[in-house]
Image (cartoon, rainbow, N blue to C red; front, side):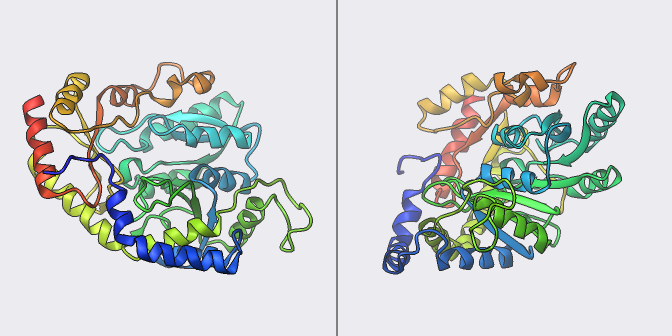
Length: 372
């Protein structure tokens, strides 16, 4: 058995090398390294893939969040609600834009934002009267779509907009709708280890609103007008370059196949591990993209050490709830967020990628059973 990789980007690169070389050569030939034809082609294909009317490619997943938040005019005095258990980029984007993050607890069953706690946090914010509830940013943690039916309804009642953080879930679905079209705005990441990853940073934002997309295109190019001459709003340097788009276009050719492999491997994991450990699970209509395969274990440090000794790499996403980070501690809610805090002590992600063999996966499960 070959050594088990937590992520395996080399096998995919070897498979696509000739096509990627061809596409990169085309960029070198036409020389439009910024704003080349590959950018528009990628946006068109991603919009078609997700079912969203508009897609705007940007420089990173964080820029995708930031540009979407800036496009709504969020600023001082505006409350933006987000789950406390996720990566720090979501909170950073809110603060950079000038908004105030309000941390919400998550559901143990899904590890995603808890709609019931969202209602409580909105009510508390309104009662305090210091901030205006403006936006909700659910995160599709580990690839599992959040409960958008409930979250969208809550946001609508309070006149708030919803921005889906789909950094880990591109390729997922809820019923007959794809990630990218589950909320009025969605942001994703093309970091190399994502379900669709480039060879560097990258991201995209999705919407059905052409006016919103036009604002995003302006913001990503320093806030300039269509001629790129006059700044008509505050913007950033948030463009996705042509070379990364060329790589992503090549990877899109096998994306559906890789998603099918992820789901088959996840089902094999589930068959062997259900009843042994807990793991995040969504409703029947929720189809995860399985950006990661994560379990909950109470004696995590010992389990992780035993797995390492048996040649099984693991990782922890995430070690701290966001309100426990020094940068965000000023926004920590009184009384804490118990589910997020407990998950930070229990989550453990197992090796997972489309090129994991059945033999390797079975070895992981056998080692895990022994470690427990």
